[in-house]
Image 1 (tube, rainbow, N blue to C red):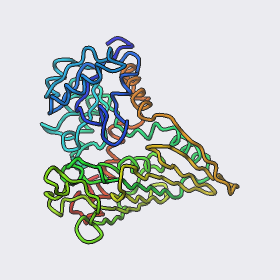
Image 2: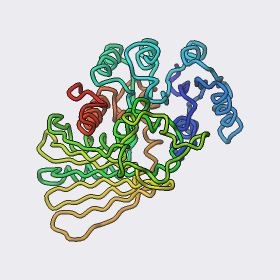
Image 3: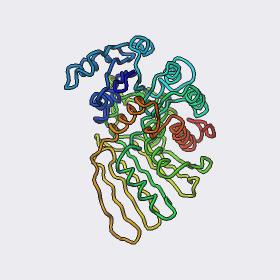
Image 4: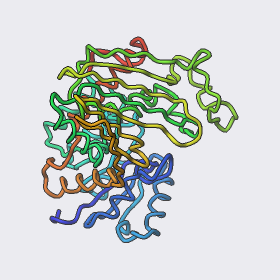
Length: 382
């Protein structure tokens, strides 16, 4: 591989890699604008979807970047055929992250010396199983970045700076995430068995931010409760419907339907307290996401980090809250950092390694286990 050119392939041709879904957060739109990157392939179990994704890119403004790209129905065949320097793994949680075939995507890529950007979550493997993957990746020396893009956000960097300047640092972290469910039309999202549940699959970004801002969590301190799908307060008035006209989770056994809300709290190893409230309760498309930290004299509010990102800072000795707006693109920053790592062979630019992301995965499992009374994740396996 030359110093500048990086050949890149995509495993999965869905929204996270090629756009659509809830927002313009796809990787293809970023990588095609990074100098020296050549996109050489896309693989999806629905090969027609991969062909369509590539055709759209090849006819776009950055079509030259995609001129060599080929579509495949099997990612293993793609890797052998195009021999990429790096791969973006954008698959459903149930399709990767395990130590044995057919879902051993990360381990198989590592054995071939291919760098990888793995979208969250790490999969549906238990933390103990995922540890086996992490151990193999560490032994192989594989270069791995995990898609916790908020670690690259300017507003989050500003929060870390404020906490670093605060005597005693963080005291309390409060994370709130209420998703708009009306147009969540992926059936897997409504089935714990396929998605892992909303804490593992969705709130994982805020769980990761909690660790990034507050440090490690004492897993034995985690307490949580949930509103299950069954019963009056679990009913949703604007459930999306499938082709049959029935709610998307109508065929999911009640015990495997995702919870409508989860509230958790814990203690950080440094002594601070943390809490998370997650809901599947808003109508329409616009989510509500907000993260707040308290210190001695300090309060920071990260508002709407997925959209019109703002940060409110009240500093020690002041009663005023100063608001700042941010228009940086943490997704682009994450992808640029990954390409830099591939070019240099050094992981210094990567802010979420596989081993670090595994600790976030373990915490989401613990919260899920506590909230569901141990029915849907095995507490203690983190």
